[in-house]
Length: 150
Image (cartoon, rainbow, N blue to C red; front, side, top):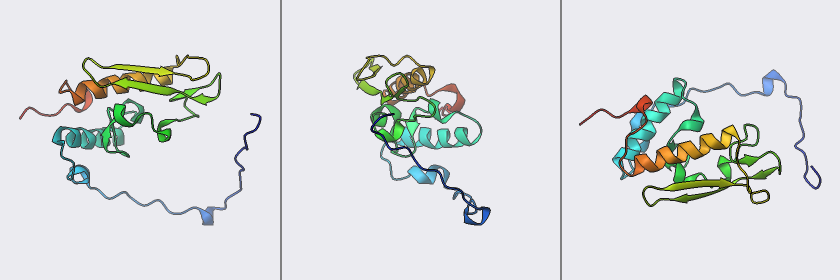
């Protein structure tokens, strides 16, 4: 890792660690200001599903950006070096994402240096984006959190 500074570790005593606070239970209210009610409902359902064991890497929505995951997956926040999501381990670079929102929609992940992005983690990213595209265009929400029929 030439030219990169490594993060420094420091010992922390138990007194320095803040007590965890329960998150406010806002549920669907958290997304009440969103115009896209389908998006708001799926965001809330995925929040609940994650609390009950759904991998956050399989979400079709992003609770941080409050949008469909394919719309913000290119944000540096979505690069997770430890798990390899949007990361090329070979080149040690963030993987780029190209999304075509026009149906049927295409999602391409690639390393800017080697052109590859064939890890299991990046396949999860691609699948989450495909699910997100389908849901945005009115397709079925994933079965885990399918919305009840109106």
